[in-house]
Image 1: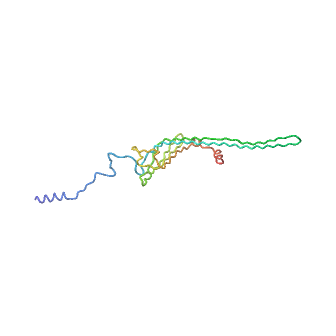
Image 2: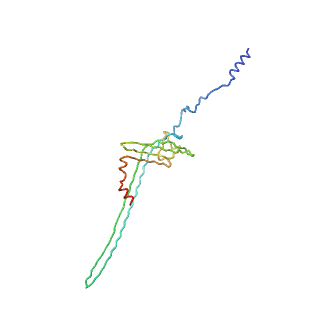
Image 3: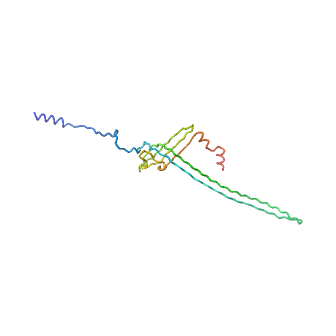
Length: 187
């Protein structure tokens, strides 16, 4: 009887055992995780702090003059005639230009290059008082330039293209008129 009992126990416990892992790749939540974007489609916030300034100056000075003199005489009388032509001009000009842009735009990782850099691109559209303003950003980001709060400075973008465009009444009023455009085209 003891043999049958051992045989039954052996059959019960010798059958294959099926078990599942507690780890699931889709639901795994680590206790400590780096939340920096690193996959295609994830978002990174670009903090734009750009300042540009330039100064150009030019000057010119020209001086041309022509003098012609004639002395003619007859009957003991001398007649003098003098013709003089002159041209003096001076010119100069200075152009000062300063621009400053402070904004933040979220961009999407479009591709990851072989060296690990991320190609990013994004746009922000703002409508304010019937004015549409667009900020477009694209460039390459190194993973080590992304901070812990998932932001990167615009000065750290390689091949950066930052475009700020305003459309509307104010934007149109800052454009030169047709006559000015025509005169600039001629000269």
